[in-house]
Image (cartoon, rainbow, N blue to C red):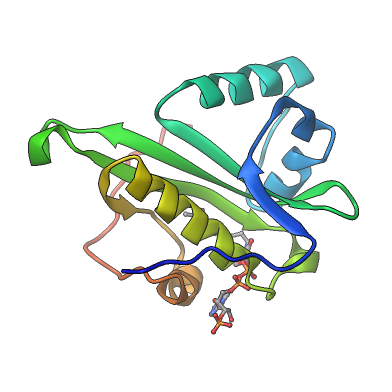
Length: 154
Ligand SMILES: CC(=O)SCCNC(=O)CCNC(=O)[C@H](O)C(C)(C)COP(=O)(O)OP(=O)(O)OC[C@H]1O[C@@H](n2cnc3c(N)ncnc32)[C@H](O)[C@@H]1OP(=O)(O)O
């Protein structure tokens, strides 16, 4: 599958950095789920760990004129023994600020992470999503496969 990750003018996709705490990264994530309380120190530690690690890549979209983070998605790279010690990419926590939806930004974010997974040697990329988002991921070039199972600890 050939994937391009062009992005609309005025926006940039890049790896999250500590100053994104002040660019309202957590506010956009709050449109996806309950973020809870995350201090500046915890945010900096997480982003720094993610940047140094070989397995967690947090991508953000910055709206350049307002310097605000308006999109976010994470790629987790799972090292495997199978497929000759290959890796599997997991896409998690995809969200675009409601004001900016419908402009192709979510698709650019997913394509960016799929491209990153390919560069990191993943043999596939998978994710879980609600039924209402299936069409969106199909537009991103993904296909439905198998069923989701979980045990939740709360
Ligand atoms: C693994 C996970 O994290 S699942 C969680 C997904 N995130 C959420 O549910 C959070 C709330 N939703 C959002 O943040 C956004 O609606 C997103 C991320 C799902 C989509 O972001 P957007 O920037 O609006 O999507 P984008 O504009 O790139 O749409 C790409 C294509 O998918 C289509 N599309 C987007 N959402 C939907 C939908 N819900 N149903 C059908 N088609 C859709 C668009 O029409 C577009 O089609 P086109 O390429 O033919 O023009």
